[in-house]
Length: 217
Image 1 (cartoon, rainbow, N blue to C red):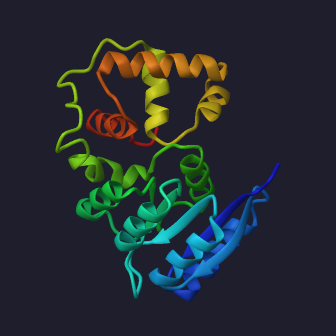
Image 2 (cartoon, rainbow, N blue to C red):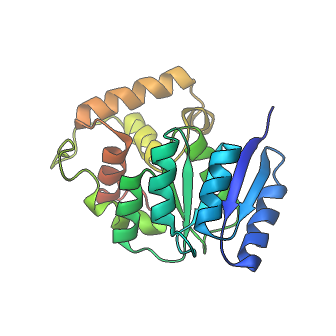
């Protein structure tokens, strides 16, 4: 299996070294570059085209919001996982609007980094449970589908699957956790989304946060 190619960007040398150590212990992940300012991160990402860019919010030259917008404009397929020390909703909403696929607190458990990287690479959205409830408050506003005011009649399995999709798990991971096939996961996911009237993963994450699905269990 070819390792996922990862670009790291953080302006603190010690933190950057720590990220490199965490990534290097996983054989399925490979660091292809590292940057200590936003402008260098943008250029490296465009030159190297990594599978996932792990990006600090606060950096010199260009901050995480500016890098995310510029990178997504130049290369829409890129997957960006943002690292942050704080849970300011405004930052998170702006980065989501700019195209970031995930957010991880720097205070999270070390093993969460690899899981978050895999989640965003698989096309999912990863939100650290500690910031999700506040971060998604404004997602879906300004033209997106309105969220249902009351929970639809979901089956227990549909609730389980949608909750884990919102938390960043891939269909394959959910299948393993629930001991069902990927096709069955997709069926529960599609049926649940239809019942709730949700059209996107962002809508699902907001709904999940409002109903307490993102709290650790």
